[in-house]
Amino acid sequence: MGRLSRSVIAAAAASALLLASGCSSDDGGKSDGSLEKVTYLTSFGNFGRDAYAYVAKEKGYFKEAGFDVEILPGQGTNDVINKILADQAQFGPIDMTGGLLQMGNGAATDFVAVAAIQQRTMAAIVTLEDNKISTPKDLEGKTIADTPASVVRNLFPTYAQMADVDASKVKWVDGEAQALMGMVASGTVDAIGQFVVGKPTLESIAKGKKAVFLPYSDVMTDLYGNVLITSKKLVSENPEKVKKFTEALLKGLEYAIENPKEAGEILQKYVPEANPQAAAAELELMAAFVRSEGTGAKIGVIETERVARSIAILQGAGAIPDGMTPEKIVAVDVAPKA
Image (cartoon, rainbow, N blue to C red; front, side):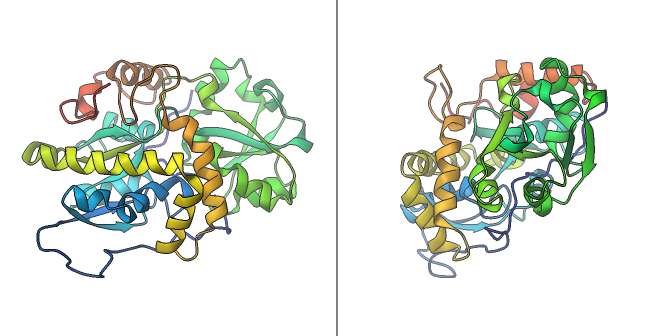
């Protein structure tokens, strides 16, 4: 079984939303001297799935916690980790599986997760109904496109094994992240690697054709999606700062998934190029992944038992060596409690 890549690039990029626009504090510089400046990175660009940070800013949650927050667009797990470790930002979300790979293989070890953004991975295989793929088994004999570093692509051998799919009968081809949706919409490939929140954008590009998703979470239930990270140094030196920031961000997350239309409008206020309708649709889809299904646990909780099972999945796939433990990647003392 092939090794997983050390970097995970979030998929679901499309021309309907631009990646680049960032946002600084409301007054463009220093505001109230009592507020502490913090730089936050989104997971990847400024899509609806990251709108909750702008909601926390707009609703005053950051200010109430004592922070003047600058929000900048991240460029995937590897980028967010590297910038936080270089002290170019203090907080940002990454894919938990990508973080486990980085830490497990020693590529980056001085960061920790302090809250869960998505309780389940949003990774999926995505196709259009015309391609007659409705179950994992239907992928045999088909061609799927994705970036070489995608978590969807590199987790596929494990997913296939668990879903009773013969991975040797599935052909993978390379595709640029921004071109993937167009490839499946045009019929160049049968399916693509994608996040489930990409459905509204894909159906728009495919001119109304229905998108069909095969979520990895259906068979890999223990994998978290995005988690909020910071540096081990900041947790050690100022745990209260980490707790306060995390609480404020999670308030924004909860508000965004409960009020997706308003959250989409707030995103567009800060990022004029954003599509508020598409952003709202992403948040509506993401809501089911934010809340802990069936447990009643509050938003943001990370369960070390689940992380341990995720580690076991990756070790079983030969992706990371033995010795990795949940306590190495989760800041248990500052993370939200169930």
